[in-house]
Length: 363
Image (tube, rainbow, N blue to C red; front, side):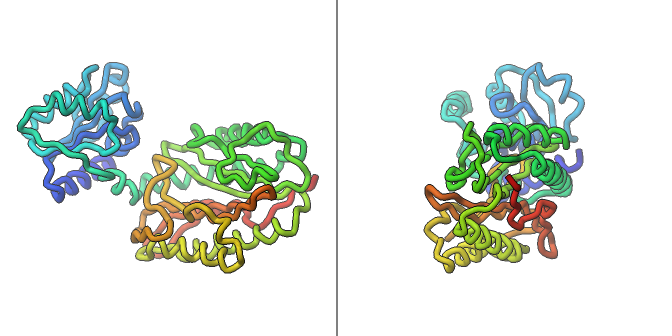
């Protein structure tokens, strides 16, 4: 539990810098990050003050959390989450309160109604989310396990996939394999996009039949111990159009060049620029229409984001996806994505166990 206590202390230090006496936390991912609570948004609140913290939830969670919270975190049971939070904040002497900018408007209105007049409150955008960008050792281990499960599952899938199956059949088999290797659930609907549909960056699996000559883009993320992987590979069903072969090799090199850049101190837009410039130099810049990557952890899309004109310094402990792509309408597309952990010396590619050279499944 010591890692939760360290996270709360980091947040308390941030609150002191922001001249706040406390923070009201309603987001499920942030509550889990601070206390281990897995009930989710709407199932409780966490308050953090200068001197302590509390998890406020209802009786459904008493048996799980009453005697199983980090030191210094009180357990308060009620159905009136916000009413109890206000009473606890008053007792703690809070006069300057922050709340998450993502709070639902109805909850903001309730808070505005029940807070005493002597408690000033305001939104604090991304306070905990910024802390979450730098993973601690416990989080890094979970991310490694999630990536390892994905590597094993995808490598097994290569022995399953064949011409004549539907995209949904492939997605369902990958779901099954992930759970075989310890995954809990997907973090988004698994993407299996074949043929012309591989040019759709978010082409969730359908009942389209996979055909000979198709490129198949498979993008998937699965939770292990609350932390998710996010991996993409594009494979060929036999021989493919020469232009698709060409863009595959371009994307592959862009992926490798961007990963080679990853280390503490580099800026996120530099990493993006390396991949984007390489693709543009080969004439396909207009067909690369998304960021080069993003953070991941408790949630599939976290900071930092690797995109043009968004220069954030990369830090040891960041988990970055590196996912350049080229998408040619009505022909096909390629995306290759790895999960890359930033280390003090450079980086660790958590998904290197899946071959990135073009794999051809013989029809």
